[in-house]
Length: 159
Image (tube, rainbow, N blue to C red; front, side, top):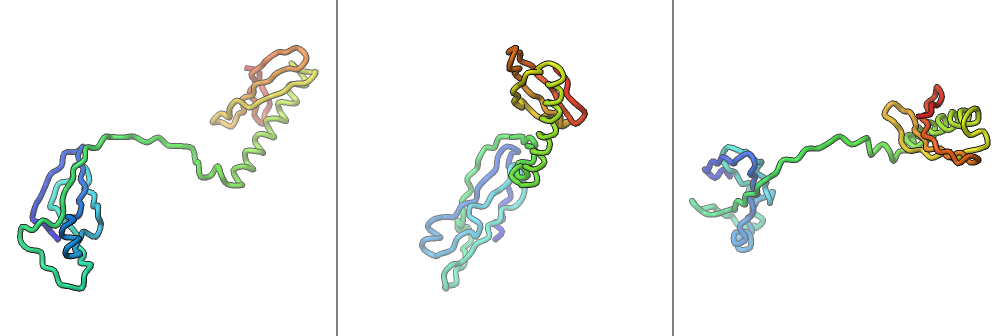
């Protein structure tokens, strides 16, 4: 129902339209979408969609209070895009990750056996770069040397 009242909320103030408990408990008449939300900065007439939950006809009287408005101050927030988190739980994604790591580990093994750690090494992935390169922390077994190595399908480089 149109209330015949127009408002202009500030840009940082919104509102909730709530039922009047007396109207609902005595007559079974209440807003359908309680609480109703009025967007921050809304300008215009207030309307309240009422529902009669009884089998009796109910007529709203002039100036009868059918709902109440509670205002809320809102803050501004910003969102940042998060990597496709839903996709991370799919089998397809897991397989792609395994393939990437296999390529990186194969390249790393070849690189380390030809150069710095000829007598064995252990490696841990530190991160995967946006371009797909894998960055490893490598510990050489015999000489206790620690290295940072970046690998991709073309090979590896010591950082």
